[in-house]
Amino acid sequence: MNSASYLKEYVIESELCTRCGTCIGVCPCKVFTFQDDEIQTNEASCIDCGLCKKTCPGVDFDFLRYANNGDIQSRYFGHYRSIIKGRSKCEGVCGASGGVVTTILIHLLNSKQINGALVVSSYNGLGFEPIIADNEALINDSAQSKYCLIPMNKLLADVKKKEGQFAFVGLPCQVHGLRKAMEFDPILKKKINLIIGLFCGFNMYYEATDYLISQSKIPEKNIKNVEYRSKVGDNTGFCVTSLDGTRFFTSKSEYAFLNMVFVPRRCLKCYDYSAEFADLSVGDAWELKNASRVILRSIKAENIISDLVKEKLVDIFESSEYEILKKQKKIIDNKKLYIWERFKYFKHKPQYNVAPIPLNGKEKIGAFIFNSAVLLGTSKFAKLVLRIVPYRFITVLLNKKR
Image 1 (cartoon, rainbow, N blue to C red):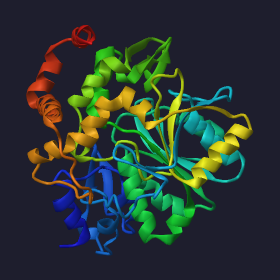
Image 2 (cartoon, one colour; image 1 turned 90 degrees about the vertical axis):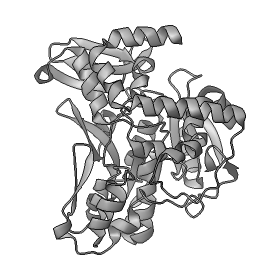
Image 3 (spheres, rainbow, N blue to C red; image 1 turned 45 degrees about the vertical axis):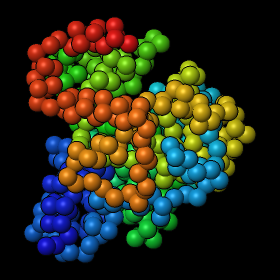
């Protein structure tokens, strides 16, 4: 069995593939491609160099080995040095929650610390793809989260061919793949200047995007663009804009239930909520309007934030673990706590070298309720209900429940 056959049988077909794209980015023979939300393999082209097996984070990622060794070690957020909230002061900077990531990237680019940034951009109005943004316009265009599966790390091969250093913006699983690739490739390790991780509950198949587009009643040929974190008044949510300016909008709180229907099985096996292995991790600060939560995990990240403050590019505010847990404990428990009960449902599980957290009675009940809801939500029955029941009727019921 060559390396490609191994990945196909023990990673892809065993529901352990994260779709991070690392195998695509490190393979010298273009054995792997990404199509219809899945990694495809051409095993006949494999020379069995083993790079894909060594760098794939699907089967295993050693949390102890790759730990940043920050000053503080947290059960929920890994190693870190400090936690703050931030908001960009730069006019015209894009971002759904403060524009901190965009501001960091533009600052690094303008100060010649990087030659570009690995980010996700939209194409043809409907789809999303990873790109290396080498100017302010491209970085601004890549702002806002995209809730679909994107093989970010397929760009690693392109990074190695380019001059200079680069910043990387990605989800926890993508950061895992990048860290493993950097360990085995000194050139890549030298090329990546900064890793920015994004908080992630669970991702969704593109089928969720297709579903929302269908609810807009706007024909695909007439769609100008699709945004998951568009701002309409005081609300942030999914927006479809037509060529004639017609818009369909639904708030993030309304479409959040789709995460229970279109979540990939591998996401349910992930133990990393806050991108613990990035240099800094960024998420929404729900209690402060237009602000980002920032977990600083390295001295380099602290120095960058310090420079931004000195140059009056961002405002920063104090924050803490307590503040995050106060607002996001439920979603954190879903990912970091209930996973140990959820593992009982799966035949194939990734190895993290992390001791399971024992649950008390109340937590076991919470785990049972959430895990049962996910198993029901991802069933064929749930998708049948979605096709029959009007979307607005579902959102009205959910809003009343809240």
